[in-house]
Amino acid sequence: MDSLIRDPPRLLAVSYGLSQPVNVFCVAATRYIMAPMITVHHLETSRSQRVLWLLEEMQVPYEIKRYQRDPKTRLAPAALKAVHPLGKSPVITDGDETIAESGAILEYLVERYGNQAPAELAHLQPAPGTPAYRQSRFWMHYAEGSLMNWLVMKLVFMTIPKQPMPFFVRPIARQICGNVQAKLVDPNLATALAFMEDHLKTHAWFSGEHISIADFQMSFAVEAALARYANGGNFPRLAAYQARMVARPAYQRGIAKGGPVVMS
Amino acid sequence: MDSLIRDPPRLLAVSYGLSQPVNVFCVAATRYIMAPMITVHHLETSRSQRVLWLLEEMQVPYEIKRYQRDPKTRLAPAALKAVHPLGKSPVITDGDETIAESGAILEYLVERYGNQAPAELAHLQPAPGTPAYRQSRFWMHYAEGSLMNWLVMKLVFMTIPKQPMPFFVRPIARQICGNVQAKLVDPNLATALAFMEDHLKTHAWFSGEHISIADFQMSFAVEAALARYANGGNFPRLAAYQARMVARPAYQRGIAKGGPVVMS
Image 1 (cartoon, rainbow over the protein chains, first blue to last red):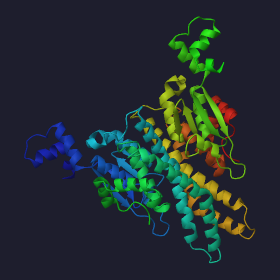
Image 2 (image 1 turned 120 degrees about the vertical axis):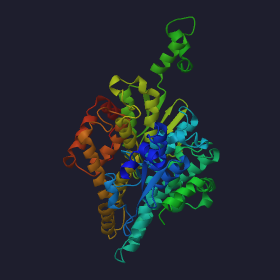
Image 3 (image 1 turned 90 degrees about the horizontal axis):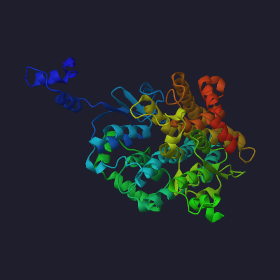
Image 4 (image 1 turned 90 degrees about the vertical axis):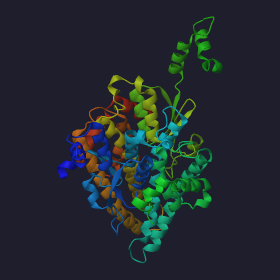
């Protein structure tokens, strides 16, 4: 049976009692239906959710291989290093290709499968030279290149004082971490969130009126920002953006398969 | 005279004693020679150096507007907020366009001016579908999306114990920051540097045998990594890569104009 699965023309022929293997179009169609080529190596509560959301929107078949964080350290498990030497999530495999780094994965998927996506996603990669294209390029880099940097740092400085330590050290740890947040992290996050809030005054999605690749790249950062730094009340447009994103059926299918996005 | 400079056809006519403004081709050529359209808003010891290096390699004219860090906090000055609301460097203006975020700036410059670059830079943007293209895409996102995150955090945790604080707090600050580096930051940097070192075994430049846009994006991270985390002795290929980059005349012209790259 195994050898039949690897030989769809013969498999189809056998299944339907035909005397000859079926034609090439059927082979392609069968491959597509029977064996998703894409595997998302999915770490719980991670940037991986943006990849699931994109695949669900594009209606591209994929399978998920799940990884749990270490219950104590909350870090990614060593098993991910077998997939890619950096041992991080997200990482996908597509046939023989292994692709790491959120931005690179999204760009690969849009380039490779974007033309199969539903019509609503026609602007996933905006046309070169348009304002949407320039916006998309900026937010593709800004999400992880600037914004997430501050959000990860926020998480680290929130977490340090909760670690095991002698009781007389904890108040000092709390004070040091509070200072760094107040002087360095929070002012940068305040600027970043005000900047995004302002942008969303005139843009329904990050690139403009249509959903684009930049929204998938920004999604995790928006959720982390609203969870770690701001409540929606201060940033109504950002909160409305998140609500619009979360309401999408494809986003919800991603959550149903991958679990919640942000560490609680 | 000012109004003449803004009107190259008339300026040329006046300069050469002609009775009529000169033709459109001359106008374009004169604009190009006389008035660089690109302004690099350059913050000392910052990611801005990678932009100067690229412009020097491509031999595209530009002018520099300089910004100094606050002598106490080492943060970017408020004046940068007048250029772009995030108030960060690098940011460039090109005619009416303002472009922020390193990766977006490099991509813009290569797309817009890459075809004017010397022949050696023919692979600045590798051809789609090639291994060099996949490598380039990965490193374009990895540099700031992952690697710099850890390098900035390293700098922050190295800096905290040096801040003014009561004498009895300092040893505790040193211990807390040392712990975070040992448990979180340094293991991630060790993995990252080993990964790059391994990659450079089989790649002269980050995308492959030719210099590409990814090298400009990675340059600052490589210099920061060697300065903050590793001495070249442990990572001979990374050190050799840095030496190869620094030896390039265009790189040196960038340094001569912009000053040193990494904060000392």
